[in-house]
Image (cartoon, rainbow, N blue to C red; front, side, top):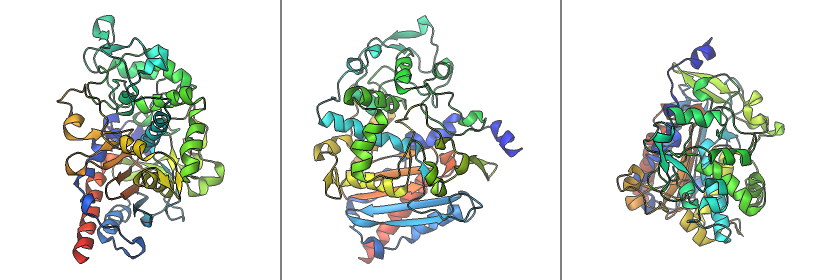
Amino acid sequence: MAIEELAHSGMNRRQMLRGAMLGAGAGLAGLPFAASPIFAAQDQAWPAVSGFVSSYVDPVKVANMLVMLGQRDVPPQVIASGVDTLGRDRRADADSLYRIYSMTKPITGMAAMILIEEGKLALDQPLHSILPKFERMMVQKVYDGGIGPDDLEPAVRPITIRHMLTHTAGLGYSLVQEGPIRQLLIDREVVPGQVTKLDLPQFLRGKPADSLEIFADRAAEIPLVRQPGTRWSYSIGLDLMGRVIEAVSGQPFDEFLQERIFDPVGMGSTYFRVPESEIWRFTTNYAIYQDTLLPLDPAESSIYLEEPPFPFGGAGLVSSPRDYDRFLHMLANSGTIGGRRVMSEETVRVGTSDILPETMDPEDEVRKNYGYGAGGRVGFGPFKGVFGWAGAAGTLGFVDMKSGLRVGQFSQVMPGMAYPILDELPQAIADDLAAQQGGA
């Protein structure tokens, strides 16, 4: 009965996905990263972070929570509590598998940056030079307004690779849009993701297209919600980037990621489809309903055990904290890890810096307050070097490019922003860093 009630509960899509949008990095810019010491992880105490983790796991607000902190080449500190699945014995650890959802976006962004480094793409290259169907796009005159002939106008400039990486292409998103444009995205199967096999409207995104090529072709037929290059609007840009990577590299998108990022970085536990051999360490994703956790996507029957219609570059990966820490470590090391170069130093610098287009409306919230790089937010003010993003099921990963400090936080609960994790975790880290510096 609880699952049936959940299907009709008042949780809306905007609330569920807030953690993957503007609010996802709300607490990132408040940390004293630049002053943080290089710590010896084995000897370091993190009482505030430990207390933060316990405050969620002990009252069963989440089944588990893990925070991973690293800096430079010192082994990372892991602070974890809880079990992969409630009622089971396995304790969550750095090798547990989590649905990272939109934390997939920075990985896809860096894959695109690799092709830019090789001269096969350019930041300001028009998308239609690669996918010709995007040459003559129409745009809604009013955001989330009508889609009739009188409601649309031609795009004033072409969509570029920069726009796609920074959510400024004007592309819609069925998770975000309202009104007829959302229904059109669903009807045309321009749906890049999956959540559960259960019939829960709040968590269903519609049926995805059968391939990345079909997804891209249909996306080209749907009006934009913003004029390209003018406003930040969370979108399918990084999912569409998967098709661009295929077209430019000559490889299937998932194979490109495996060959150019996962294998060289050492991310052996990152998948679009979780192998049956790894179910033993796969977490269950929960939905919050009346202060109770209900299984939304059980590990043993997860939708992630099935082959997805196509690899979702915006929200499709399952990964372990250890793997994602290696990805952040590679970025912090300016493109190298374990003595192996994955990306050039300049490519990492550009990809983790603010690359928002100059044509943006000066009143745009992201333009005024933050920045955006290749699939992740960039902090402004004194914390320009902080790069990262969050996932809809309560995950977060970011790195400070100046100090090398990197942080990963993992749990599995939707809506991820039902709890103030993104405010409390940075504060806990800041408290511990201040104590460490004070005792130095």
